[in-house]
Image 1 (spheres, rainbow, N blue to C red):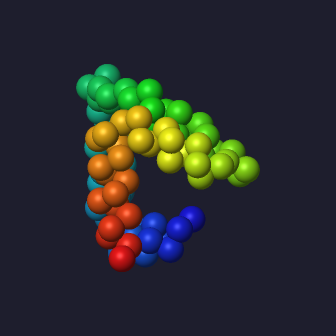
Image 2: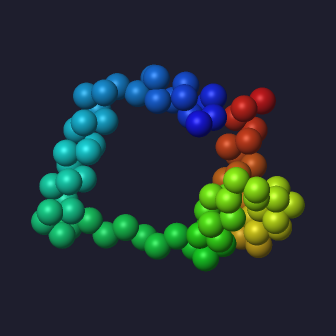
Length: 81
């Protein structure tokens, strides 16, 4: 877990998380939850990065194939600076 993610988890209100969880479970039970599919590139990035020996060059090459994903990665990475 990254430090940024750990800081986020510490700052999350547990009651809010439980409410969201409860709402999601209810919507799933009622078959009212329609989740969008991940773009192909995002799925490939997840597959590659799940390998502990993943090569960052391969990850970067995948991200460069999807402008929206590349933009989000840049925005996120700029938050850490």
